[in-house]
Length: 106
Image (cartoon, rainbow, N blue to C red):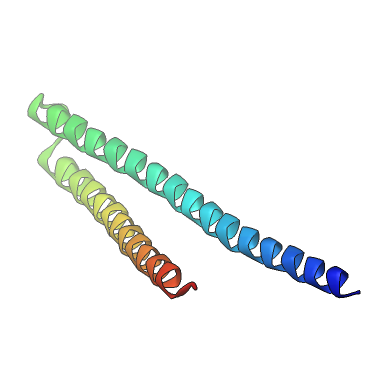
């Protein structure tokens, strides 16, 4: 009976540890996926801004159209950069929390 209780406690401890580590890994992967999407979006918006400047300099856009489109693109870029900054700070906070958990673990 005692062996069964010890074995059951061991299995429970192992399952708990696996859950903690795998849950953390999936969160990190989700953040990396979101990071990659945002970085791709940022690069696309910057490319669109370069194309817009080229079109304006080539005389294909009026100044009013150029200013309006540029303002829209710059606003979208600012939003993406803010989201990237937020993810970066969340990632740093998670890393700090994870380090604290490891330090406190016996």
